[in-house]
Length: 324
Image 1 (tube, rainbow, N blue to C red):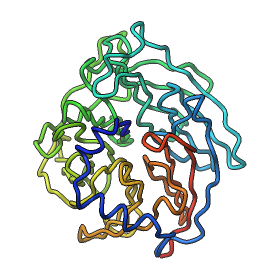
Image 2 (tube, rainbow, N blue to C red; image 1 turned 135 degrees about the vertical axis):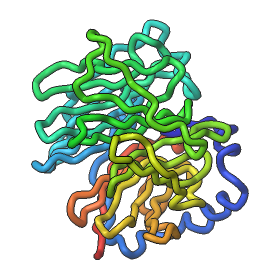
Image 3 (tube, rainbow, N blue to C red; image 1 turned 90 degrees about the vertical axis):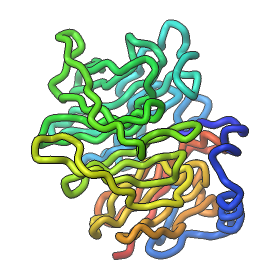
Image 4 (cartoon, helix red, strand yellow; image 1 turned 120 degrees about the horizontal axis):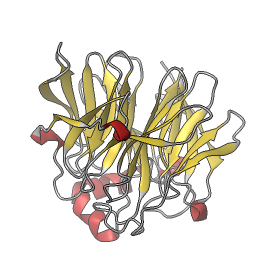
C-alpha cells in the first residue's frame, strides 16, 4: 500500500532503481510467465483500488478496495459484489499514519469462509483487525493503536491466530482469531526486530506463513525477511532472504521451495525471487501493471491486483500463467 506523493516516491526510489524502471518499461511478459492479460478493470472514481486478495477453492476472489473502505467478492466470471463497507472515522481519517485517509488493507480467509481483514483509520475506535463471517456483518475483533498502520495479514489456521504487519510501527502483531474487543482481547507484539522497521516511510508490509516461519517484506529497505516460529509460538531467528526489491508490497510462494513472486508497487513491476534470493523482473507496465499491490496463485494461474496509487489510472486485475 504505497499511496505516495511524488516527493515520497523520490525518497523511496534510488537513482539505480529509476534506471531499472526505465530499462524494463518496454519489456513484455517474460518466462516463467506467459499469456498475461487484464482480466478486470476497476472503478478508480469509486475508490476500487485493490490492495490485497485471497482466493477461495470455489474460484471466488476476495479483495479489499482500500480507498473505498470495502471488502468485495469477485466471481470467476468477473462479477463484483461488495460484502462490507467499513464505517468512516469521525475525523475523516486525516490522522491515518503516513497516508492521511482511512483504508482497508490485508485480507485472509479461514476454511469456513470467515474473512479477516485490516482497517487503518488513525483513530482508536476503528483501527485494527476485523472479521466477517459468511452472511454476517463486519466486526472488529482486536484493536490496534491509532498510531499504527496495519498492512499485511496472515492467518495461522492451526494456531488460530493472525499475524499483522504494522508498516508504521515496524512490528508484527499477533492476534487470536477468537478475539473480540468487547471482551477485552488484545493484540500483542510478536516481533519488533530492526529488520522490520521503516527507513523513511513504511517498513514491514506483506506477510506470509511458509515452512515454519513468518515471511515479511520491507517496503523502504526492499527486502524479504524470514522469521522462524519457535515451538512455543514465539519469534525465533531472523534472516534477510532477499534484497534489492525496492517498493516491494505483498507476495506469494510458487510452491517451488522458497521461490516467490513479488509485487513491486512503486517500480510498477512483478519480480520472481529465486530460492537463493536473486530476482528478475517478469511483468512490467508494458503488460498492463498499474502499481501492483499483491499476488495470489491458484495452481499455475497468477493473479496480480494493481491499485494505481501512483499512476492514478486503470486499477485492474492482471492474470498470467506460471510455467513450471
